[in-house]
Length: 337
Figure: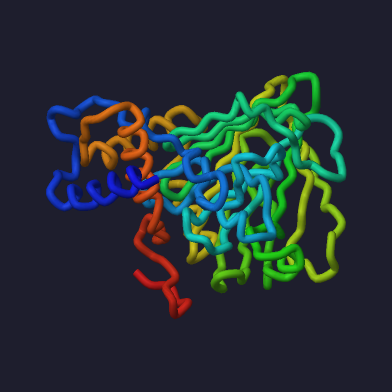
């Protein structure tokens, strides 16, 4: 730990005197190979292994727990169940918030508890990518991201129906009681059979409103609104069943905005107009290499992992919450440019 702190201090001092792009000697090097996103996810490091983009708005990834200080980032390395995949996180803060729009894919019949055990050996994380196999739910989950758009790829057991739990009430909170009351207002709209839009106003660390658009590459065949778990809840949960038409891969894009549904749609249209998961990941990886290559160090493999993982954590936040046109909601809760 002491070595990691020293390396991070060195990186901060060097950042001031290095060029923004890769130096000639480092051009083409893959610095993401030295980043281990699982560092800090045990005990109380409050980091997470989900997909990220440098200073981006979105951080899709797994949630293994909630309702306590231990889950400020929604993930604890030693847990053996995943509750779902939310779209954003705080990193290393020691405070609870975000964890918006929890999505949990599952194959076959619905169960009362759709959390799933997972194959720990299948869990992979690198800058811009996270993947895991959900054992109980019989789905391989992969996520990547652009600055404003989380991209999910679900590979189902082809012998079973493809379903998704969309939980609009969920969010990272301090206690189980807060889970029922942190949402103050919510709207969910189904626009055709592939798009869901809406907004949520919630309060935990701060009061805020986020707007979203969710788009699938397959049509929703049916939807079922689940019963409230608590009468104080303000947002719904849906089970969505999909017409896979012989395919077993479902892709989903989630764009968010602080300004409006139109802002979320504009972010989606500007950044990810296609359904090529690998391209989005490649773009994120390339951007991470631009940032990580600003500082090049010599040392052992462990030294490089400590150094570049620290540098990686440095560039996860602060998050640029402005839309692609520069609009954002500031502390006065007004749209600003």
